[in-house]
Structures are given as C-alpha cells and as structure tokens.
Amino acid sequence: MGAEELLRRYLEQRKEMGERELVLDDLTVEQVMEMIGARRKPGAPAAPGAPAASTPPSPAGSDWRAAIAAAGAAPGPTPAATPSATPAAARPPADAAPPTGGITVGGGERELFGGPVASANSLEEIAALVAACTKCILHKNAKNPVPGDGPAGARLMCVGEGPGASEDETGHPFVGQAGQLLTKILAAVDLKREDVYIANVVKHRPPGNRAPLPDEMQACLPYLARQVELVRPAVILALGLTAAQGLLDTKESLGKLRGREHRYHGIPVIVTYHPAALLRNPAW
Ligand code: URA
Image (tube, rainbow, N blue to C red; front, side, top):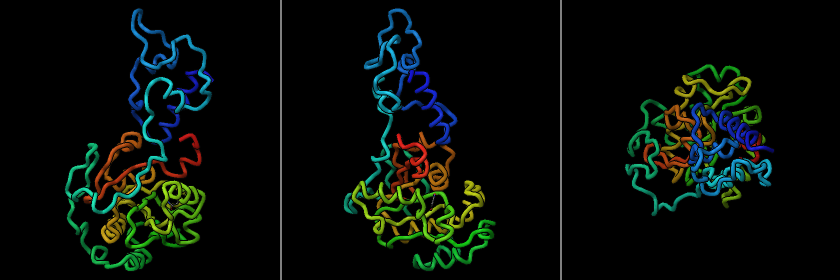
C-alpha cells in the first residue's frame, strides 16, 4: 500500500474519532510530505528516520502505526497504555493542577451538585433515583435504567457514553460486544471487571444508539457526579469522545484529549478510545 493511501486511511480514522483539525501526533510537515512522496526542497535534509521521497511503499505494509513510526514519530499512547490505578498514598492532592496541561473541572470539594441526587448516600440510592428519573426523554423508550455497576471502593472508574441494546435489555453497563472487549482490556492490565466501577454519562439508552444530546447529558450528569463522589476512585477512565466531552465539559477532539491527564473534581481523568471504536478499528 502506498504512502498516500496510508495517510488517507489515517486521516479517516482521525475523522471518525471526531477530529476536525489536523493534529498529526508530533509529525513535522517535512515528515508528512515525505510520507506522501512530496519532493523535498533542494538541499533540505531528510527528516530523521523518514523514508526518502522516492522510497517504494514500506514493507511495514498496511499498519499505519508502523508507517508513522517509520517516519520517525511516535503515534501517541496505544490503547494498551491505559493507566493502572495509582496507589492511594501516591495520589496527587485533590486540588493539584494536572501535570500534563489537562482540563480541570471543579475543585477538590466534595459537594458537586445540590438537590436529592447530592444527598444520595449510597450507589443503591442513586440507582433508585435513576430508575425514577424523567428529567429527559430518554427514559420514555428505554426498557431498563442502567445506573452503573461495581464496588463502592473501586479504584478505577470507567465511564462510557450511554447504554446500548444489550445494556438496555439487562440494566447493566458494558455487557455487549464493546463491554466484552472492555473486560479483556481491563484483564490486560491485571484488573478484574468486578473490581472496577463502570458507568455511563447517560443512564437510559438513546434511541437507535445515537449519541446522547447535550441537554440529556446535562440532565444526567449529576448522577455520575454523585457516583464519582461516593466511589472516589483514584482514576477515571473516559471511554470515547462523548464520555470525555461530557465529563470534562469540553468540545476538544479525542486526539487532543488523549495523552493528557485531566481532573474531575480533583480526580485524575485519562481519556482513551471507546471499545466499540476499537472493535471497528483493531489497529488502534
Ligand atoms: N457503550 C457505552 O458507551 N456504554 C455501554 O454501557 C455500552 C456500550
């Protein structure tokens, strides 16, 4: 496969991740131009590690990561680089700024929202409030509420977008194909799914698996906030663009949000791909 085709595929993948701007993971313009076979200015040195402009397609074949690495740039953390939970003693103070210039939402204070949700004293109480919730239209078509699963003392909290068909049927988050992959990803970093708290930004299934709308996310966020407050995990892992944007109250792209440490009311937040996107793009 030629370099142009590789670059086209790479850009399509970035677009699918919700990126509208081109941020090429530390690649220099020279490197990209060399990758697509554009001629260097006479006398300009080749970028370190980049194939010469006339080089035939690399034997690295169709793997875009290998192609980018061959061009001398790291394509950013791989999905396998998701964090293991930080030991409590090593956790940064709740009000410390994120070390990697990430987004900070809220301070380290405990009360995130007012009202009955804020006074729920257990995850079970939150589940009951979710089950009775009519704050947005999502409850109308949903078969079951999907408040979240996991122990109150979990040190890692995974946050997805919203329930799909399998989750709607069962009332449990991440039990479909994407959920099975999430279980494997957790196992790859020695975490049992039962030890992790798993929830979504919205607690009822959006019809036809569409992304939740901003007002639906706003209506539902107090439940997640209180879950975070009660579980008080060491790390939150936001799975995919919608979860990350909802949690971090931002419109930044997934490409920009990955690889930085953010803070949600003092708790470190790491953003990674949604497992469903990984199923569609195994090379990620
Ligand atoms: N996708 C999500 O974002 N959440 C689920 O619970 C299942 C699939």
